Amino acid sequence: MKFGLYGIVLAGILGGSLAWATGGRSVDLRIDGVDRTVHTSASDVQGVLQAAHVSVNQHDLVAPDLTSPVKNGSEVVVRRGHLLQLSVNGKLKEIWVNADSVDQALSDLGYDSRSLVSVSRSQRLDDGTTKLSIDSPKKVTIKADGKSTTVLTGGPTVYQAIADAHVFLGPADRLSV
Image 1 (cartoon, rainbow, N blue to C red):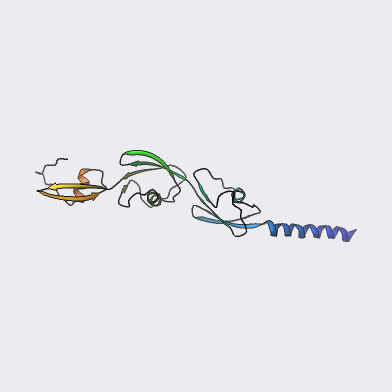
Image 2 (image 1 turned 60 degrees about the vertical axis):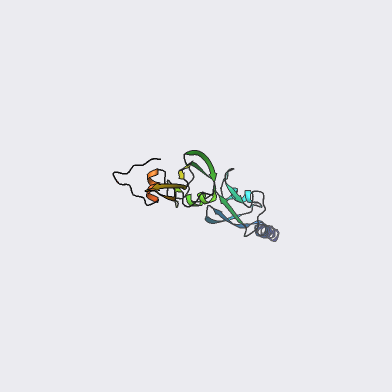
């Protein structure tokens, strides 16, 4: 009787260890560039995220997708969606991006690095809505003293374009647009 009880306890310990060894996984989870390791018995990405108490929504990118199987040593990447309220050359629009910074978002959206932006390009995007004003560079021809000068300017005003062209107005100079 005594040896039978020991045998049952030993079988339980070995069985549980064997179940953990065959079903336990160590998965690398990266959320917006921050890494951590999740120990789980989940068999797919969705299960890993649930075990790590990470929720995702329709604007987040998850790779591999939620139904993909995982094994020991798998990597799961989540890029959070960020809402940008853009004013581009005076036209308002809202767009979701999965970038970490303003600079990366603008690059992903195809905006020229010479565009003027209302906030620092190095600003990190947070969970809230980020408001940006973008003025794209424009080719402007300036005629001064009978000479034409073409300049590429991102400035929002005629005076900025004149300054970018290195044309200096005196008190008696007249300007027409």
